[in-house]
Image (cartoon, rainbow, N blue to C red; front, side, top):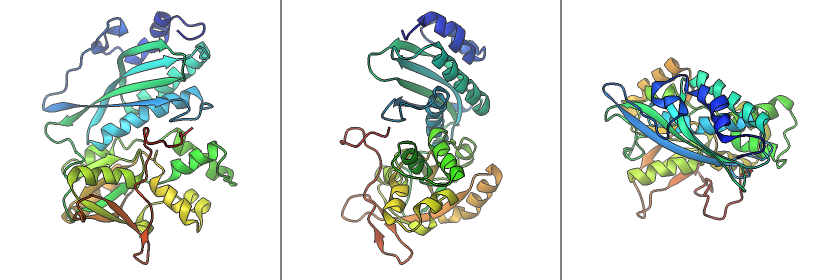
Length: 338
């Protein structure tokens, strides 16, 4: 176990309270747990692991590590039109971690549990000679047979995205010292968008019955829309000038096309990209109003040419912007994120 911490004492003192007394967690005193979905609902399950030096800088505060780990999983559940309920946590701790780190980490989880209405169901803790890493399995509930999949987009669907795109990529570049953001408020905003993403937990379930297909924007807007296209057997065109960018991002990027492209492909936004038929435009506007989440129509799906589903980006003069596939790929020789 990590420095100065007994595994079972760590569970009893810090993690057991995160169960909020839910009976299925069994007080974290067993080696399994149970979940019973509500009547007419089905369980939706997702999992994400994050590793220090790969998914977040090694200097990240423990509370931010906790919030980021939970929120990226909440985002997966939201994109499926499900409401989150609970999660398990597998935590691999190096010797450099002490009890103060653990206390701050659990504090971050506890705050987000209250915000998002979830609880800890179980998990595992172990010592590792490698970097700090943790994996969360998250469980949500969706109406039976109503989960929004990647594979249901049709040709001539509208393409939408929530929130703003590219802030997190700029925030990470700022944290790593690769990008100078002179304005302190802009710098804090952009870095906060990376460290503490906002999963769209209210928007996702509201899209059930309206969205044809959806994904959360974790690998990058172009890449994640590409995942929808590949699963659905369609291609897509998006208009760069219609993609929603924050004021902070616009002030940093100005007229640099390479930086504009980075916003489209950088990842870690944890917004929702989705498609819907043109007949649903009024419903999408109503959903945005009801949830308080901005939604922008940025393009459309088109038939596949040359047999390969693809995403193309066009500028205001309708010229193709070279954006590539974009996205982070763990096994493709990419530079690590942190």
